[in-house]
Length: 330
Image (cartoon, rainbow, N blue to C red; front, side, top):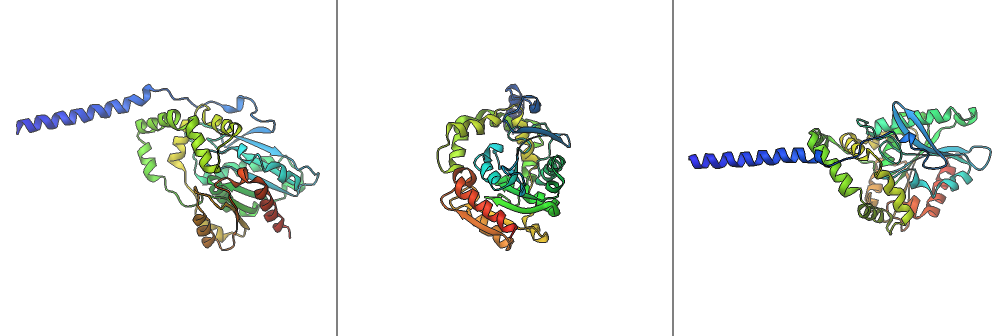
C-alpha cells in the first residue's frame, strides 16, 4: 500500500514537473513583438495607411482610367492574403470605369498587428466601413453618393457578408469569390488559448514551423493548383515575417467568428458568387449549399480554377466579375 502511494506521488511529481517545464519553455524562445508598420514606408506606390478606431489599416486605391466613375469596388482578401491577391484584377476594373480599393485586414499584409484586436467579421465590418467613409470623404459628391460593390475572397467573403448586413443601404452588390462564409465557433479554441503558455506555444509554432518558406509554398500550391512563382512566394511570405504576426494570429484564433449567411435573405442586395470549379479548400458543394440558402444568388464557376480564380484564371474571372457588375445597371 505504501509503495503504491510512493509511486503515485512520484508520478504526480513527474507530471507536475513536465507541466512546469512546458509552461516555462515557450517563453525562452523568442517571438517578434508587434511594431507600428505605418512608419515603415509605403510597400507599394499606391499604398496608404488610415487609422480607424485605433487600428492602422493599409490599403491601396486606384482611380478609373476614364474621368467619370462608373462605380466603386472594394476587394477583400482571404486567409493569408493581402492587397497583392488582387494584382491581376485592378486594371480590368479600372478599364471598365470603376474606382478600386484593396485592403489588408488587421493582422494581414501591412495592417495592424497590435494585441487585443477583435477579428470577428462584425468588427472587421465596422473597421472597413469606417475606412470607406474616409475614402468617400475625399471623392466628389456624385461619387460619394454611389454605393459600394463588396467583393470578398474566401475568409474575406465572410467580411463582405458582415459588411452587407451592417449597411445594406450602402452596398450595391455582394460578390463572393470561393467564399468561406459558413458558421464557425471559436469557443473551444478561445478557452484553450486563455492559458498564456498555450498561447505562447502557438506563437512559437507559427513563427518557427508554419511561417516558413516550404510551408507557405505548399499552401500556395494547394490554393493555386500549380507551383507559385518566386514573386508570388515573396509577396505572400514577407507579411508573415513582419513583427507581431504571431500575436495577431493567436488573437484571430481567439475571436474569429462569421455572421450567419442566411441573414442576407433579409436585405435587398444582389448577391453573386464566382467559384473555382476544382476548389478543394471551399469545395463546390459548399457553393451549392450557399445557393440553397440564398436562392437569389447567381453562381458561376471558373473552369479549371482551384481556390484563387482571381489570381490563376484572372482573364476569365475579370470577364465574369465585370459582366455581373454590368447586370446591376441594366
